[in-house]
Amino acid sequence: MRVFANIACTEAPVLQQPLTDRPQFPGASGEYTDQLEFVEPDVTAGIPVYRVMGRNGEILAPSEDPQFPQETVVDFYKNMTLFNTMDRILYESQRQGRIAFYATNFGEEGTHVGSAAALDPSDLVFSQYRESGVLLYRGFPLDLFMAQCYANADDLGKGRQMPVHYGSKELNFVTISSTLATQIPQAVGAAYAVKQANSDRAVICYFGEGAASEGDAHAGLLFSATLECPIIFFCRNNGYAISTPTSEQYRGDGIAGRGAGYGIPSIRVDGNDVFAIYNVTKEARRRAVTENRPFLIEAMTYRVGHHSTSDDSSTYRSMDEVRQWEQRDHPISRLQRYLTARGWWSEEQEEAWRKEAQQQVMEALLKAEGRPKPHPDLLFTDAYQDLPPNLVKQREAMWRHLGEYKSHYPLDLYEE
Ligand SMILES: Cc1ncc(C[n+]2csc(CCOP(=O)(O)OP(=O)(O)O)c2C)c(N)n1
Ligand SMILES: [Mg+2]
Image (cartoon, rainbow, N blue to C red; front, side, top):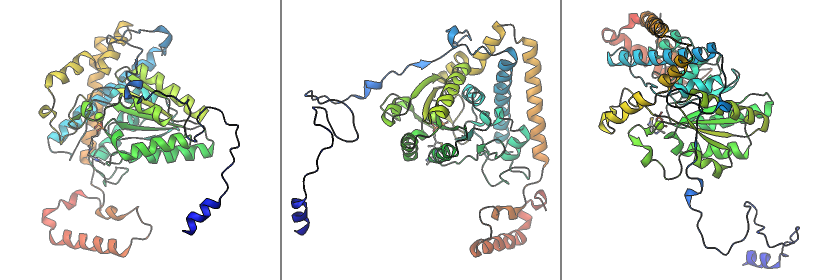
């Protein structure tokens, strides 16, 4: 009762602004209307797909041609094909039981190389598990890719992660988490820190369109806009989240269609066009840093491989569909056509390079296979400065177990 009485006695607030016939509510702009109309989601439907190159590698709009010299384009091509070769060999190696797991990037090489090339090496990368081409472009050696997948003693993660969960402090590439969208709010926090430090750096955060359905994606996008962070959200829309096609994932206009709702400038781009990817990432980076704002890029592409070695995609999509993308619109063949049309790449160069790439990957793989596994005690390091008593007990139990059942463990393969 007293509460009600207090409210009744409070004076009505005085409006500071003169009353006009415009809505004065905090939190929205716009006019009054007497039209009872719901805003339909198709207001942002049909966001166009920006591209520079046609399917045959021809430049469609000369004004958009980044006009790279021959050596830069050849370098893009070599990165994309070396990456594709590494994928093929590591995939086979998993099939032969030599590593535990693998996820290929077939068909998405252009999104990795084009975006990585547009960044500054000091920019911080947060990625999902299907963007290792970015790390390769940044100079992560094949030996370290192999060390991670083989969980050997050279692995920077000390063999504690499943394959493809790379990370490199030196190359500003934050270690990958399996849990979808974990990296999105983390990346926004990092971008906020970068802004506070006034350091001319940007953060890029990669994720799949499937991960964009996670709550963390919403939280990250919203916070980046309200905190005005220099971050590029790079969504690879490859048509599937494991077996769920995009037609079952959302009802709006893809992921770019969500940007306006968050107040984030957004663009959709042809992910099989490495030049288009380069241009949009370069511009998003420039504006993110100068304007302290987030930008959202939705790169349209197609996951040519299975989701991972734990998946058989023939159970939920036709092989014809896959073949079409592989043969008719692939980022590698598109760039190859561009190069050959200019006389910058010949069949002989192709053959020699394919051989060399294969050899580089195989050498790294065999070297990794020959290295010992990390010392078992490393399981317990790096999380705590002083090991808590429960983990001390677990470590003792591990050694007791290994002592008792040593014939079942290849302990001679582990570092002493
Ligand atoms: C929180 C969480 N839920 C589910 C999974 C299982 N999972 C792993 S990958 C994946 C699909 C992700 O699809 P997308 O983000 O589109 O990436 P893509 O694999 O297509 O590159 C799912 C559901 C997970 N890792 N984490
Ligand atoms: Mg996907």
